Length: 429
Ligand code: HSE
Image (cartoon, rainbow, N blue to C red):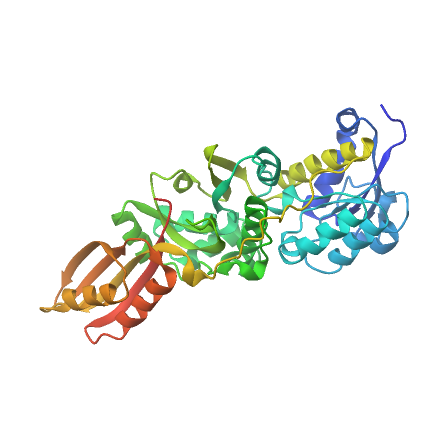
C-alpha cells in the first residue's frame, strides 16, 4: 500500500457532507485498504462554522473554500454545496490545481456538465457524480460502465422522492394535493419551499444527466420538457384506478423509434399497476432501463437523505482515489453520438382525456371527429351519464404530443364540450 495519503477537501458540511466526513473518519482503515492508500480528510469548507454538526473535526473547518481548493496538495475535492455558484468556480479551480472532483450537484451538471467534463479532461483529472441522481441507487456507473457495450433505448424513472411520497399518499388515502403536501412537509420529506420538487425542476435535472449518459449525447436541462405535479387531483387518481393505473411523476428519456433522435421529459403520467414502477411507494426512487441486449433492468432504493447520498459520494471517492493511485483517470464524457433532442411536440405518447359533455345525440360523433381530424386514433371510450351531461373518458393510441395537444385545444372549442376535466399521459405499457 502507498503510504503517502490522498488528501480530500470537502466543500459543504450539511446533511450529506457531515455524513461523508463521519464515514471517512470511522471507515478510514477500510477505505485505505480499498483504495490502496490512506485517504485523509484535509479540510472542510463551510459557510457558517457555528452550524457545523457534532462529530465533524472542528480543526479542519474553514470558511475559505477557494483557498482550500487552491492549496496545491489536495488530490480530490468533494462538492456537496449544490447550486450553480460558487460550486462551478470551485470545481473548475480544483481541476486547474490537479484535483479530481466528486460532486452531488445535479443542477450544475445538468446545466454545465459538458464544460466541466472538458475541464476535467484538459487537466487529466476525474469528474464523478453518482450522488447527483437518485441518492444511493447506482445508476450513473451502470449506465456509463456496465451498459457501455449495450444500446439503451429508454430510461423511465421515479427520481424525486418528495413528489413520489405526495402522489403515493394521494393514491392510498384519496387526499388532495395540498393535504398530501402538508403531510410531506410535516414529515420532513418536502422542503419549506417545495417548488424544485413539485414543479419537476429536480427531476428534470436528473433526466438531463441520465439521458446524456444513456444516449452518448449532450442533453441539458433546457432540453428537458418539464411539467410539475401540482395540478394532479383526487379525480385523476379515481380515473387512473378505473383504468387499472396509478399516477407517478416520471422522468422519461427515450431514443426515437427510428433511432435518429432522443427526448427527455418530466411530467405526471398514468402507469399500469402491473408496471414495476407502480409499486414504488413513499419517498423511494426507482429507474427502469430498457436496453437492446440486457432487456429490462430496474434500479430501486432510497433516492435522497444524508446517509444514502453519502454512500454514493463515498463510492465515487473510492473510485477516483483508486484512479489517482493508478495514475489514471476513469471514463469521461461520452457524447459522440450527438443525436438531436426532439421537442415535446414530436414525442410519441398516449393521452387519457376526461371531458364533461352535453348528453345529446351526435356529441360522441363530434368528439370522435376531432380526434380523427388530428390523426389521433382512439383506443377506448367510456361514458357515464349524469342528468343531461355526460362524463366521457377517451384513451388514445400513441400519437405525436403536438397532435394530441391540438386535439385537446379543438375539443375545448366545441360548444358541446363543457369542460376538459383532466388530461394525463399514459406510459409504461
Ligand atoms: N429533493 C429530492 C427528492 C432529493 O425529493 O428526491 C434531492 O434530489
